[in-house]
Length: 436
Image (tube, rainbow, N blue to C red):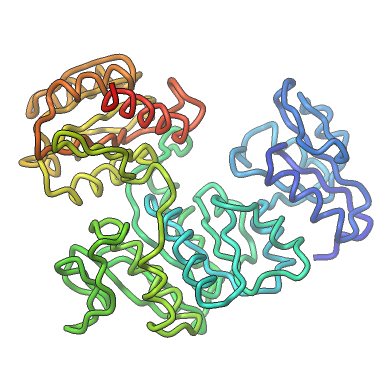
């Protein structure tokens, strides 16, 4: 992409927007300006030209040659489209970075498990002596990685549907499709729109690339070679049995005692093993790195165990599929803490997974009343307002041998700025409770 003499409009003043602005400037753009529709927005880099509270008139007046959009902004809305009045194309920060990154790209998508898998692949590559950066929706903005000198050999890219909406020529060497389940219906009008956005990860791949896909996923015909895995189906090149990842009857990795031994993390582990094999690593380079890997926080994270009750923080669970996976992975009776923002989802599909595993539901947040109606017919349910009250209620009902699973199944934005802040509140509440 030749940006010499071009005017580039970057939409969104977050870290990825700032990185995109710097990358465009580094490659010859005559003028780069970051715009944000929020009049109170603040750009973290004072050296970058920035217009907060930009109007559609200002957008049209800029006469951009290229528009680079942040994933949180919808490209088909009037404000974003106003920047294209002179015929400028819209691409995302990931697309821009991919045009200047000269290393190898491993891209990971899926409704759940992306961050853990991305972090694990980076960890394995680094332990094997390769240079790698986790980036995209986790870690660094991809444009920051593309700006590095020298660039790493590998970009391990967590990529969301929002980022995939605006790809054009983006093509990973290895694409990992972990799973697909309903989510983000506050952004998409139809589930098929979300699905089609996800599928764009394969759009430009050919027979020389590899797609690593969970068994049972409904993927249309694609060009890259498909390699499958599953912890539940009993089929695929890699499968899971008795805490071990197996290929046919040979144990590839024993996860006993590691942070990856629960079934949902075992699937992330399988995907990571296959991705690293696909770029040339041998099992004796991959497997040792599994023993000392710690998953990112808020993903079935151990918080405490007192009086025989285990407390787990799964605040990253922002949809039904993630909570289903967390429930399936537990062998103890579950006190389930669930709730948060109303994203327009139907929670009835949770009921079969909960049957015989969940002894009590504690529902909280904006969605609490709906959850009480949906889950209360089949499960004992208590409604509270806050996470702290949910912890207090769980402590009163949990007994030795139980697990208190904080897996909200929706986003945090009714009461918190992020799932991380919500998970921290849960962790602090539990620690206060168990140490009081």
